[in-house]
Length: 562
Image (cartoon, one colour):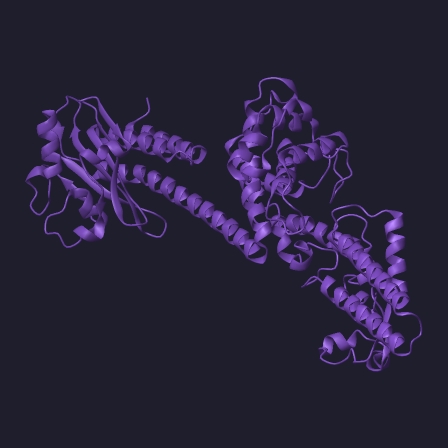
């Protein structure tokens, strides 16, 4: 038959294993360890206090076997209110747990109520309220690996085999302290886990704020995509029929999706602002349509001067010269308005539109008299191969593709950009924007996420993939993507389409948004099952009512968008 030491050792090993398996459930560890430690001395009562990093002493768990009384959590504060330890450090008489926490002492008393210098009013009050008698007591602090007090274990009324109250022996004390150190290990692991989580959350918050500072439009996007993602993921988990009926998410999956949705665009930290927020085709740091307008102003003034010169020379009748001047101005006005319309990028350019732009660029020219080299930085001057052509008077066109405009990493030529067929960004700028997802993946890969959060990279890195395999960066198909990643793709699109703060587009009505998303579903961009759930569950409307402008919400028949 095993002796008491072997039983204690077996319990100790089992508790260690249980702590490793249930490190996330510290309360359960505390209960089991305190119960096992109490059995060593056959203690009738036991209490556990934790000491927080903010130096508060809190009674978390209490048990009196003979009274069959167990109290867990904040209900213990009725017997022992939370104590801020610095406030009682200089108090003459302290409660046993306070002494252990502040002085790091061990109390082993044969009659605790008669100990001098110890405030036992809480124990006496408990005795009166429960017709109980507290006699012997063992109270000791628990330390973490840095020898900081993280808790206090208190045991009362050790008993012999006949139930008689006896003292806690030195041997009992050593064994019980060793046993309770498991709690300190569990608390430290919990604190480290919480610190890691807090660090990760802080990193996410700092990075999101950095992106927000770089571009307020992207910043709002980063804040809202997690909301839509969570709403659609919840609807998917709750689905009881169809292809999604067996979809489930663990706590780790939820947390990974939360982090991924916040960081899905973190790579945009390297995207130039003028590209990310480019609201017009000619926009770089400023909208260069004003420079084009100034050239048309020059051309109009030249036309006016030419008209006046012809009048002075009596080159023709006043009526004919005026008609000629008016016709020129009307044509210039029409051509400039056409260029301005093309600059917005709301409508796709046709072949005829592009031909007209080429014609405008060739037809209108003027003489530049002042040097283009004046006021340029050293770096700008390096881009110009033939400075002499920029110094001397030169004929220039109203729309230009000058060498220095195309010599850098991006093509900023005026004619090239105004001829963008759809939207406001050219191919080089689109590639730069698309790079943000590769950068996002690389940034997240370099973060030491624990194995249970490894899915963060996949969730965040696939939100620009398409179910037909034509997305980027990896051309994944729907079968190769996880459901959370496809949820994020829908959330990303919906937020971008409903946003009212984008400088490159006017806010869209909800019906317009759903029509676009329906087309994206039909053409292999979005997952059809999740899109259908998005509509049928009403997630689109729940989000719209809370987060988009009321003027954007028009009458919707969801059946029309399935």
